[in-house]
Amino acid sequence: MEKIETLFSWLDHTAEIIEESQDEPYLDCLAHAMEILFHREVSNIDDELTIKKIEKRLENIDLNDFQQKDIRKAVQMAILKGMKDNIQQQHLITPEAVALFIGYLANKFTAKQETLTVFDPACGTANLLTTVLSQLNKSVTAYGSDVDPTLMRLSVANANLQKLEIEFFQQDSLRPLLLAPVDLVVSDLPVGYYPDDVNASRFVLKAKEGHSYAHHLFIEQSLTYTKEKGFLIFLIPNFLFTSDQADQLRTYLKEHAHIYGLLQLPESIFKAKENAKSILVLQKRGQDTLTPKQPLLVQLPSFKNEKAMADIIGQINAWFSKYL
Ligand code: SAM
Image (tube, rainbow, N blue to C red):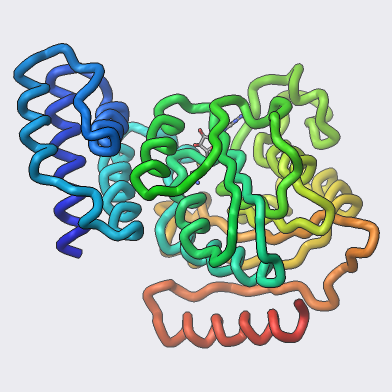
């Protein structure tokens, strides 16, 4: 905890120093501070006093003193501080406990594979993606994409500080991607309407009238960029299968995927009940894929309830032994 605190306060204080001199939002200044720490060079600041102050701070920090998980958590704390006041609900960082749980599932679903390609089409700050990568004990090639330039800058700096190799695309992920289909998609889907009706018209899951749901289009796009038999692990809103366009989505999924799991997260993690989410696990259909005999259907207890959590993990592990 002490290490995490030390690195968090270095990042936070450096970001504040940059904020005072550059007059930019905190999250951009945080990304700038992370870049300075990674390159050990104060660039893109023209005020001498600020440069001197940060150079002095650089003398007191060495990245090699920190483990990857400490770096991830310190960065996470600083990003959370920056997101507290001024960010839209659907752009929030994926919470640590949820990201760790998705990492555990990713490891289980891909246990038989020795190498893996992984993609997060809505990678935001890359917290979910890097948390998953840190748990996959195999050789992995990773890709992330997001439309938001500040979050993308944070993503790149986050991956660099954690010494993780990830190829990033800064673009609307619902447009064509320069990416070959991958083995695994993990994503905390943006929820809401997608404003670009012209681009939406390329998708089977476009709305019959008005704007389409971004979360539906993201599922279709992710399946397009997944290999046959590949798995997709999404964080979805609880209302995904009850909304007005749910029938269309269900029909599409029946044709293109197998539902392997639906795990409802405890409502206590989310600020409002309406924002509560579940984890949906799909497998892309292929020539010799089969509908699972028994999908993994779970209501997760509070992550703080260690006993109940251990029981559920026991049941989930038993499910994997029996059905996968
Ligand atoms: N997993 C991320 C993390 O740990 O930081 C958080 C993902 S957040 C819930 C959803 C992300 O979707 C946001 O970062 C937002 O910028 C991105 N997004 C929304 N619409 C997009 C689009 N059309 N193309 C690419 N990214 C998009």
